[in-house]
Image (cartoon, rainbow over the protein chains, first blue to last red):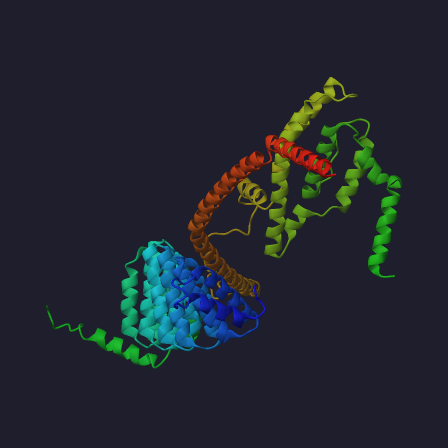
Length: 296
Length: 290
């Protein structure tokens, strides 16, 4: 075979697949083989554009041969090359298509892996798309009943949200992590997730939301019995007292240092905004009901 | 030459000429096969160092003189533990010494059952009376060990003997509750300061330990979760590998069958016969054409 010139291989394969008067059935088998060889040749020659195209065609050939697994693999390679070319739209498309093919094979795990890879590639450039991919990957895993694998994806998605400064979404993702951890009895991850959610709310300076979140989490046995619960209650108490020193001290404690590094960075930057304002608000709320003449 | 070198050389020389060391040889050879006597002597020595009281052994006619010499040397050279404990001004050091004495007493009490068993064994060169004497000695040992003063017993026996012998102890002494009475002496305030300092240091140390333990706990639970994650994957791998192994075994068996069939001896003979026939035909043609 003419392995030295990938171009020749491509043109030969194209000829095999193009339907014309002399050719009534496209010969996909040999064409696919030629496409794969051409793609390898291009990759070695560092001709990424052509290599990508060759991989695409090879994947199409494998689809025609009814082997979605190989097709998906080729698409992944094509997507990796598209990433090198900074062709972001194509990256997203390729990874999505690859994941669909994996699902066709009945293998949800490689499907979610493909989506995760896509999301990681798109984190910097197309963050919205990245988040979408992460969410889809997590959904696939949850449907398969493998929430354990989803933890890392949730954490990565939360990091992207925090980078985009969408704190409520980040906190809600953390709560989803907690839910997934609950299903697998991973109490340590669960408690860490809840503590991270509370910290994110505090960083967004939404004290009421943080308090509510804490109350919700308090209902859960595993959280109540944990170190993270104590840390969270200390933090909220320090916030309501308006004690900045205490907040800084808690942020340096070892419980918070065991969380994800993005969350640690947020915690170290606490308190944001004016903590004493919170203190006076709370004080006012408490004095009203203490009216001795009111006998009800 | 440095001090370390000198020390090393001295040690080696002493070790080399050990056989000329009278004291050491006496100690090693004193009892030969007599385990009981050796152990008993060791217990006696321990009691001596705790008591610092001269002692005269009652047994083993052969080695009495040597033993006496040994014990006198011990008496002069060994630490005056319980005496020192009684006279120690610094209460903390005194408490430590008393604790040491108590530990020694505990150890000695543990040795007594061994001695009792050994006392009943027959050793050559000992008469029946000697064995009886040994048993009596072993029986007397516990009381002697208990009698060593160690800060608790001393005070108890002293207190119970007679109150009048302790003129310093008073109750509700009238007229002396003036301002000087409750004043902290320098000693006690220093003691309190030291206590506070040590407590603070202990707290700091405990804080460091607790942080380390936190990290360890976090690591351990993360590892736990990771392992939980790996378990179903391993099960899958297990099943897949089992299937692959079964497939390979099947294939092997079939391959073997096919190969034996192809290379069977019958085919081989047929091949040779046909070759011979072909050769015969060629020869015939050759002969015919010639």
